[in-house]
Image (cartoon, rainbow, N blue to C red; front, side, top):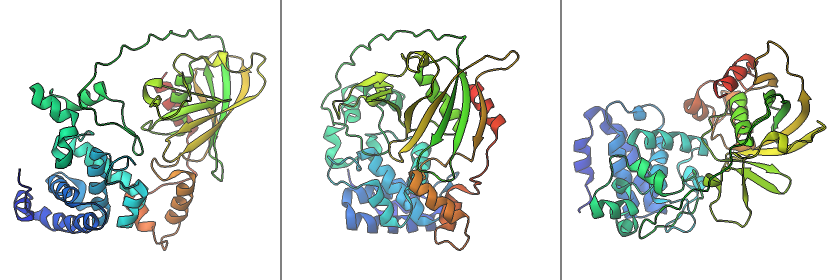
Length: 373
C-alpha cells in the first residue's frame, strides 16, 4: 500500500491544526533522516496527523516536545528501545535528539498512546517491513481481531515496560500455560507493624512512617505507593537479603537466573523478627528511574482502641513526580523550578506546572492508604 503523502495528510488535518502538524513533521522528518529510516519517517507523519485533530492538546506546549513524543510512541509500538531491534535507539538518545528531558518524552508519549489507544505491535503504526512478524496481523489474517486488541495483547504477552524489555516476535501464539495456584495467606489481624520508609539518594530526605496490620508484601507495596503518592504505574520489587520478591507474572522475564519470590503469598509476620527488633530491607519502584526505598521495621505496636488502621503517622516532603528521571533527575527538576532564569524552567513548568517539594499532608496520606484497604 502506498504511503500517504504530506499533501494528502495535510488534507486530513483541520485548518487550525495544520501549522502545528507541519512543524511537528518537519522535526520528526529531520530526526528520522538522521537516526532512523524512511519507514519510521512515514509512520511519524501518520501519527502526527492523527494527533492533530479536534480535542487534542497538541496545540499546547512546545513543538519539539510533541515531536519527541511522536517518535517515542511509534518506537514504543515497534520496540525501538529494545537493543535486539534494528534500528535501535535508547530513550535518552531520543530525548537528546529533540533537546527535551526524558520526563517530557514520557509525558507526551503517554498522552499520545492513551489518546490513540495504542498497543505494542499496533498494526496501524507497525513498520511495514516487519508486518510478517506481527502476531496481531497474523491473528487478523487468521480470522479477525477481537473487539479489544489491548485485552488480546495482555492475555497473550507479558506487559511491556517503558524501556528495555526484550520481547520476541513470535510466529504463532502459543497456548498460555496454566497458572500455578498460589496459597492464600492468612494474616494475623492482631499484629500491628510500624515502618519508616525513606527514599534513598534524595536530600532533604523524603520519608513516611506508617502503621499497618499484618498483610502480604504485595499489600505493603500498595501502602507504600499510597502513603508516598506514587501512581503505581511502573514495575516494583522488594530486595530482602539475597532474594527478590514481587509479582512473578510481571517480573519473571527470563533475562536472568535469579528467582522471583511471590510477594502475594508472603506475609510480613513471616519476614520480620518475632521479637520485634529493628529490621531493614529495600523496595524498588520504577526500574527506569530507579527509586530505591529503605524500609525500617520499627517493631510491633499495640492496637489502640478507636484508631482505624492503616495510617500514616508522620512524613516529610512531597513525592517526586513520576518519570522525572530518578533521584538525580529530581534534583535538577527542583533546582530548575525554583529559578525562573534556569534554562529548563519553562520546560519543566510546561511538563507539570507548579510543584512544592516541601508539601506533605499526613491526613491525605492516611486517606489514600485506607482507600486501598
